[in-house]
Image (tube, rainbow, N blue to C red; front, side, top):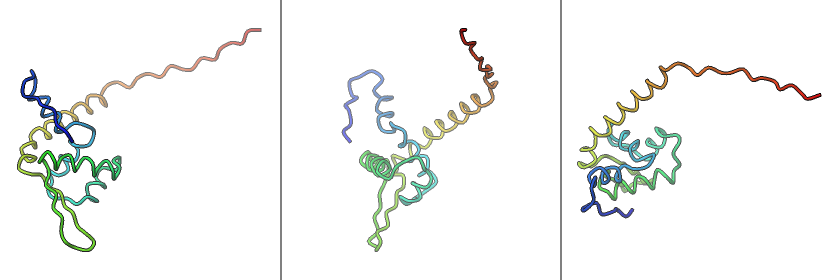
Length: 127
């Protein structure tokens, strides 16, 4: 995945960070890997909405960005494990804050008053 050059642009540090964890799944993958080393199948089970192809693509991008370490064991069948790199570990506070913010936001949405449903009115037919 090709990275953009943020060196000479205002807000570049925020853009650079978001570029690394962009998309729907990268932050979720990083969150699940905070719990320790996991195999591909374990990650897939924790994220039932992700396709195998997308998980592979996102893990490769995270590996390319040096946030995740992929370890392949010479076994039959092959065993592949993923864990956070030192750089990935440094994102833990960011991911934790995103999680806390999301939980608070969900709570705010669910605690609000339920929208009232208006009864459906039948139209009178013209005679």
